[in-house]
Amino acid sequence: ILDMLSTTVDAIKAQNPEAVVGILCTNGTYNSGIYDTYLTKANLVFVKPERFQQEHYVHSAIYGEVTGEKTECGQSIRANNGIKAGEFVHSAALLTQAITSLKEQGVTTIILGCTELPLVRKALQQSFPTMTFIDPMEAVADRAVILYKQAEQRVNNNETTTQVPSPL
Image (cartoon, rainbow, N blue to C red; front, side, top):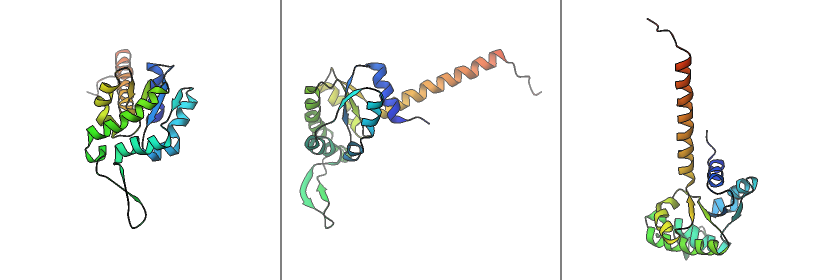
């Protein structure tokens, strides 16, 4: 089993051990501090959007902007204009505002810490061509391929050194 957070941090360190990392994610991930823990343990400097930017530029880009209306239970109603609703251009524009602020704070690498964020990666890379964007799911897939190839090589090496007799 691969640890997605550890794999993401390993990918960042392999690409640039001196990276200053920005974290884009949902409010739940932001508040949990889970990426903070892994990045701190790896001795990587990181920056998170300030709370206003997190809500209005990052979380809203994913789920849609808060309309100001509330449900009967008191929960905020969100517009249907986030990545989850297929609104990529608007969402990329919101994320651009958050990334601009992170870049001003020295960030060189951005973790796309929500499965929807890679859907606007191309637009973000066009806006920030010198920024490195890390998709945690891609990092895990890359690591899985490497581990598979290593295992396959070990199996092939054993077959050439130890001939197993034919059962016939």
